[in-house]
Image (cartoon, rainbow, N blue to C red; front, side):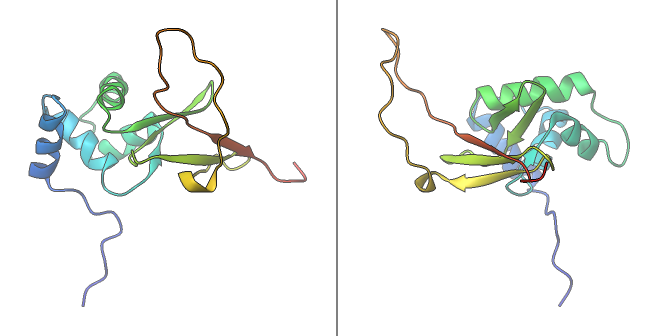
Length: 144
């Protein structure tokens, strides 16, 4: 039996259907970006997506990656996780969950939603409803 594939790429046809289902035109660049994102549950920065898409040869610009990630987040394909004003991750897991962000290592880890207890929400502005709650717990080493 052969060695298991560490980072399987989702089938192009399946990715195209997923994009179409979210009313996203499946350009070749969008499909390549989606294949990187959906290879496994992961948290990637835009620069990491860019590097993976262009690993073999440059084919996608930085602007296209940023625009595509924004579109994917807007259409609910991925989650944008802002851990600080200068650091944004794109999360391929769109199920309800929270995160732990290690300030020292830059690692972002999923936390099951049931592991975090949220009390009563404050009064929301008139004419609005809660669209979701996302908790990011920032940690660092005790001796840092």
